[in-house]
Amino acid sequence: MARYEIKGGNPLQGTVTISGAKNAAVAILPAALLVKGKCRIENVPDISDVRILLSILEGLGATVEHPCDNVIVLDCSGISSTQPEAALVKKMRASYYLMGSLLGRFGKCHVALPGGCSFATRPIDQHIKGFKALGALVEETEEYVELAAGKNGLQGNRVCLDMASVGATANIMMAAVLLPGQTFIENAAKEPHIVDLANFLNTMGAQVTGAGTDTIKIKGVEQLQGGTYAIIPDQIEAGTYMAAVTAAGGDVLVKNVIPKHMDCITSKLEEMGAEVINYDDAIRVRSTGKLHSTTVKTRPYPGFPTDMQAQICVCMALAEGISHLTESVYETRFFGYCTELESMGAKIEINGKTATVTGRNHLKGSTVCARDLRAGAALVIAGLSAEGITRVENIHFVERGYENLIEKLTALGATIRRIDD
Ligand code: EPZ
Image 1 (cartoon, rainbow, N blue to C red):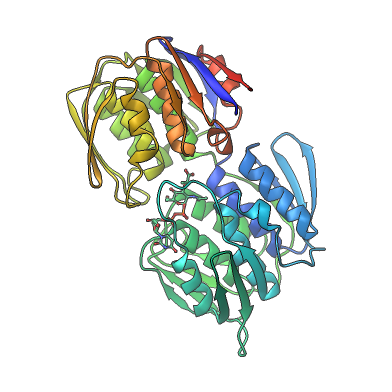
Image 2 (cartoon, rainbow, N blue to C red):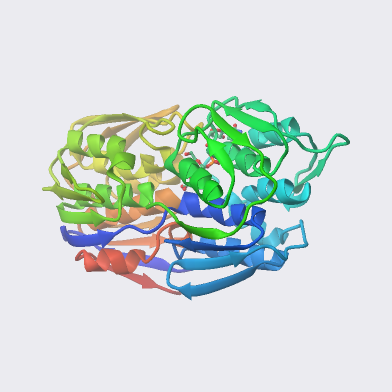
């Protein structure tokens, strides 16, 4: 298995350019299934989750062109199959979006249950609730979900989510855009990638309003035509690099960001002692590496993102004093990385949904193992700030969501290399 080898202790200096948002791309690519025509999608991150999705779409009959880096031209007009390849579907979580897009286009689908990061149980009952509200018959087994239009067909309806689920919001939106009537999604997720998906669909001719608020309205249309769309920058990738500078010290300009999306992350890093300057489409982060403790509770957007929990925990492990980190989106998320950080000298006490982190003035290099995407990213940050050599194993998790990580960190002065065994 491949691993990273990191020699810590170098402050990060220079400029890093953020890629397109993974969680927007993995929704927008399946959404192209709804379009009869060519979709030119720009700022697509070259990460393994995207490559898997493109293979799935090709397997269904789509044509995929790569005119240049980070641009995909997708034509799903000729798709005939509604059963994506199970082995590929099981490789990632976001393959559940194939349910909504195939149901919305064809009125049926047979999709294996998704795989992906297993830091928590990740049910899809809210997705199913939405599909049923739109008139779908659902067969759900341990292995797959089969959807088909009921005897009255599929039509718009009101869906009130039990929690602001990102996946369910996106899936129901995709299923509804081509249906007769109107659909209202109440208690909808407000993440930037939900807004990005709505903007993509509207660029192709859909009528989605209210994305970014608690209530999204979808007025069904007959057909979506092709067009061109650029994916937003990745809020979590940007936050990861901002946390890396905060922990390792240095002075970095993070380019191609939407500062508004970063507000909650920025304010926490400033509380810990980083200096953050916002520009139109960039953020400068400066840190001496001397950090103060803080308290973080993860929340759905616009709160502090759960996908930044592990990364901010590394900053807390290096901060003077005692910090408190509470996870409120998932039942837990600490076990993917806290033990590994403790092997580097961190002092973390987990009590239910809250971790109490007693800061140390430094971490020491160790061999650690990534257990999910963001846990792996946090271990890289820990290695950058630690004394000595850190080996991060299972880095396939990290490469699911971070484009050109080695190149970007090396350009910032980090000593990091990828070793394939
Ligand atoms: C998306 O996952 C992201 N993944 C996750 O990012 C992110 O952590 C999460 O949203 C929250 O922001 C993608 O977009 C591909 P949810 P998703 O549905 O859609 C519960 C990363 O690192 N829930 O908003 O699975 C669920 O258990 C990944 O990029 C149900 O109970 O998240 C959780 O407690 C990790 N039933 C909460 O809601 C459902 O049907 C939020 O889940 C759906 C969700």
